[in-house]
Image (cartoon, rainbow, N blue to C red; front, side, top):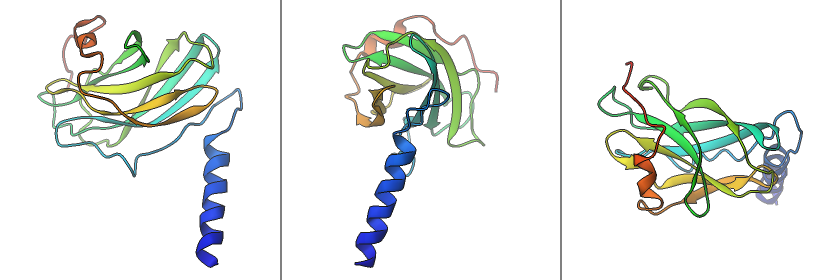
Length: 165
């Protein structure tokens, strides 16, 4: 009985935290405990969105196996379900001592009901399979993508022009 109460309370708290529709900040699911980065790839573990329709700012949390400029997460991006690039945030340096890390970017021009993927890219190994899928209206949750999903986007601008450190 005690376990059932604890589980119910945890579910209710999670639902309240994850499903807020406050216009100032729309909190999304945090899956950092469930989806760690692999030895080669970055994982998007959390997405938060603020702003207004067609002018959103995305705050994306990434866990990545950064070792310096030879291996680091070099961008995160918003992609529609067909694999078209909507927005890309270039990361200009490694985050060796800051894991996981969160970086914001935008303006992301989508409606509140448009479903998208948010995924990360490593400079030396490409896209990871651990992403987030969702919409501003309904929130985001962990999603696994095939490594070849929209793989051609890694050749599409904007692209990083180096690593600061």
